Length: 141
Image (cartoon, rainbow, N blue to C red; front, side):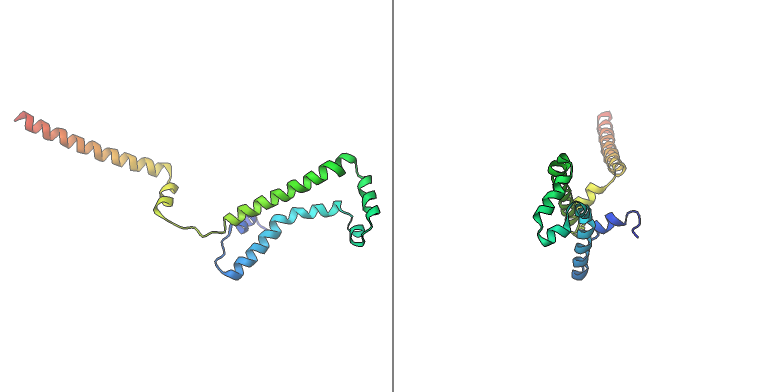
């Protein structure tokens, strides 16, 4: 049984232990490539294993032409490419998260950035007021 959010969590979970990393890769492989099982139903495995090519040819002749010759091969290729793409994406998540100043700075929320900008502006305004008071005090004497 898989809970909501468990599938993406397993795809992105980083394992630091080598044994856990191997198990994680195997689990991710099966979870990502499981849609390829659907191809199984369109291939006559009993004839393929014994090499009965005429029966395989007859099997595909019984399918509608557009499905057997065009849609099935294209769907298989698209399905394989999508699975490969998802596996590559999940491999990208298998790196440890490094915390540095630049990363943390980019992770801040807009409100934090706005508050910091407001504090800088208030500080500069206070310096300008002090400078103007200093000039006024010298000029008025």
